[in-house]
Amino acid sequence: MAGRLDGKVAIITGGSRGQGEAEARLFAAEGARVVVADVLEEQGQAVAASIGSTAIFERLDVSAEEDWARVVGATVDRFGSLTTLINNAGIVAFSAFEETSLEEYMRVINVNQIGTFLGMRSSIAALSEAGGGSIVNVASVEGLRGSNGLVSYGSSKWAIRGLTKIGSVELARRGIRVNTLLPGSVATPMAAPPPGATVDSKAMVADRPIQRAGTPLELAQAALFLAADESSYVSGAELVVDGAWTAGALIRGMPGHPG
Image (cartoon, rainbow, N blue to C red; front, side, top):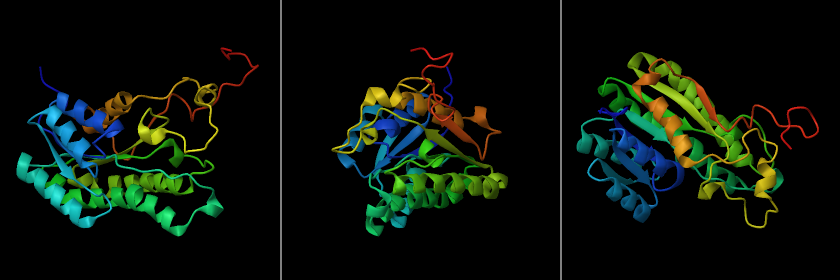
């Protein structure tokens, strides 16, 4: 039985764990050849080895231009082309606006925003040579609103939405689609509250329509759709996968509240 990604070759950044790992495993299961790209070498090598001969690991600091050139080149050398880029790598920092240093702000921007820009720019030639392809930029629902304590992270995710819109316009005639995936809460290590935070995880989701965090696999399945040919007319779009979190809240005491 044919896989949904047969013939595809994907670079997945942040592929060593969490959502990126789930994407790497799912894409390979659907027929893609996969490059697990990350700075977490031991974990990334283990993920690629467990997938088998259709996956390789490449060390990638997404904020480094020279790393991107090497990884794209290694992908084409090993698998013959590049058709898919999943800009998944990201970091988060928690601090109040007035307490955020420029150094800390730029640390997040360099990975999340600059890393996405460099990934897109570095992949254009190879994607074009393959006859086109798909870029999926992973943002966040924090790119749709403002949340306290997330000035650097939220800024970077808003910027990713802009990169996607511009890329989808400029690259369409080269056969390259660019879309944004916006997760809500996802059960990964990065989603853990900061040390010392007095956050009740059950209370956080109590008034959300779907009262739980998403799983890495659920997000990977959304990325799969955007990478597959079945989304061939989808570009410049924003796919929110958040259990209706940003759609609205359940109001206690009003009709329709389950409590």
